[in-house]
Length: 189
Image 1 (cartoon, rainbow, N blue to C red):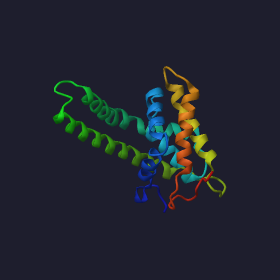
Image 2 (tube, rainbow, N blue to C red):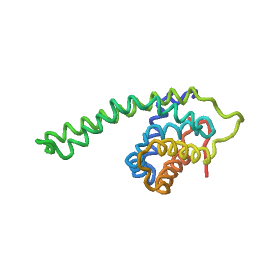
Image 3 (cartoon, rainbow, N blue to C red):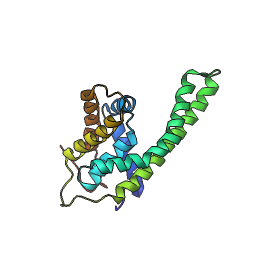
């Protein structure tokens, strides 16, 4: 395999990691707490695994700049509509609007997959590690820290950074533990 786009490795990675112990809760907390784009975090972690090195701050900024317009104009708009249908306006919520909400939820998920596909192209363009080595769990942890740091710097209210970092480590751990023969190396640990 020469690309994370092959066989939609990027999407399978995200779905598997997101189902990891405490990952969904951690991702939602990071999203709500500092506006972190979960797709940028997950794809940065995949990049660390794929290229067998931590992803640098400048590279995380590139990923954010790439994702931001689509996230703001499409993903966030669908998310707001889905959330609003949960409690109103009338006639929502009811059976009829629940079906609409489910359709919007499916469209939101598809929009996130499109965002990840764009980020997968970014992953493919990154330089691999200078030395040939196996991926290390530390690559994922360092990358998660850099992603959190980027969003912390932009957040108006920083909240409890210890909790934020714990949540990011939970996602990084699930990423490091993810096993797929198509990844060039496994982190282990």
